[in-house]
Image 1 (tube, protein in one colour):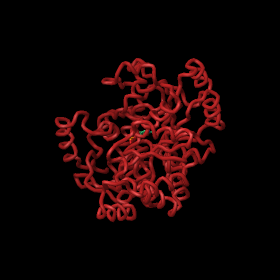
Image 2 (image 1 turned 60 degrees about the vertical axis):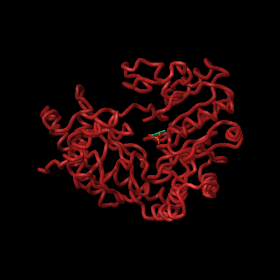
Image 3 (image 1 turned 60 degrees about the horizontal axis):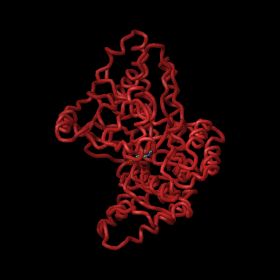
Image 4 (image 1 turned 45 degrees about the vertical axis):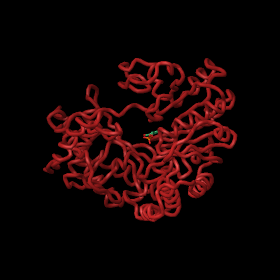
Length: 445
Ligand SMILES: Cc1ncc(COP(=O)(O)O)c(C=O)c1O
């Protein structure tokens, strides 16, 4: 029997965080209740390649990878060397940095929708910039959305439209506390894949909608023709189409999901993996939609710091140089097929599905079984075997065949534990950890 790792220092620090930091962390996905609290590590000491070491000195294979912000691997030597060299020449100049132009050129050569570029330091912030530009360019206020687009008021105001306890989208259980009520009705959700619903909303709000902002995909490719249908509706109603590729960008294809499906939006939001662990985000788009932003007040001191710029430029060039699409496909496919064999070997009903950029586990559970207990037990049993993961996987170029083999072996054991818990009705007894909270819903699976 594998012992549970000692995570006592992580837990002590987390207790102190509860006294010092409202909400414990800066990112909901880093809260302990998102994993197997009591067993999973909470604080890291160092990270390299496909692994990290927690503050209790346990080592893990990492499949979370800073919620997708790491794509080349932790502490990538090429990106870090470029950043260190830049630090020696100044991290933030008084004047503008020529790197702004270099990165803009690179993005315009890489992302189909990019003709002009604005920078930020993160994804949610870039979504807010995109919303501002779309509103400023069209002179309209309302935004239709599908997906997660950050913490800012323009977006969280959507929650005024639903009863937070109803379990309905956009965010079951999240109340818009602190968001101005005056924004209610300015941002409206639509269901992914449902063109009729989108059309009905556009018709009901004719002449008022500035933009459709959506995640074009997450774990599955879009249904055939869906994004082209969205684009046709956007054009018909004179609405700016924005793809939020903060999470789905870079992995499936360097040019984003738009380059896979051949639908070019008016604007695209990117962040996370574009800079392999350095703060960066951007809005790119057509000249027609972006140029009016010159007259809008969109301005911040650190948006053009040299660190994010050089990290992005180097990351994108390294993705191309290392043939990332092929390598990530191979890793994703090997992981998916290994996990599917592990399901069969354990006699557990379920599968590993999804695009190679984001494979995920789907457990087929008997009626009445609480899926949260099963996913927590999975995370718990993986942590116990030195693998830090949720039920979906973000590969990096640093993952080796032996990391995948270790993950598949751990999953096979975790699946056996789950299967025995199901057979003997003993899931509760097997759970050492607290049941993890579901992440907020995103509408796009
Ligand atoms: C699709 C999407 N948009 C926006 C964001 C927000 O990005 P950030 O956390 O960098 O503000 C996220 C983060 O998960 C995301 O997945």
